[in-house]
Amino acid sequence: MSRGDLTEAEWRVLKGLLPIKPENRGRGRRPVHNRSIINGILWRLRCGAPWRDVPPKYGSWNTIYRRFRRWSEAGVWETVAMILAEIMADSGHYSIDSTTVRAHVSAAGGKGGLTDALSAARGAGSPVNFTVWLMPLDDQSPST
Image (cartoon, rainbow, N blue to C red; front, side):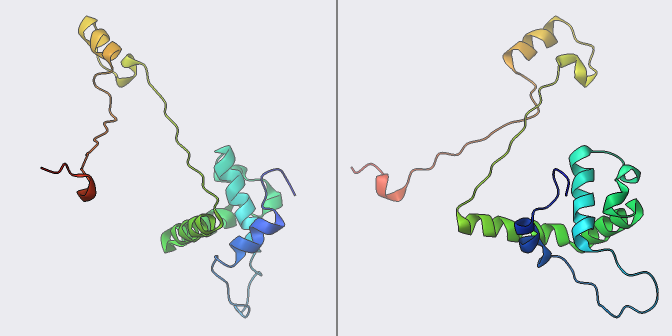
């Protein structure tokens, strides 16, 4: 087992959420076990490498890619994510992750200049905007 592969406990939770192939599929090669496929998918997503570079110990890169694509189109990943989120919430485990990457003013491809430099210094033109609505609660309304 390599660093980043599923542990036994993780696999026990995940294996019940994945589609099951019928045992008597007929002729042809036997299907690769889902655990090695999942480990190959996780390796690829963690490293960001092309599918063809997935190590052969996880199986054929083409099999891993086709299974990932088929499950994506079938909505398996959305279902798995929702169920795992429910399991984590029920057990009291929470995780919030956020990443912000600020780009230089000239990264947008504009001409630049003094006006752009001044507005960038103030944070103007940021693509992220937040709106907050403050609504009074009924029981906290001022009495007259």
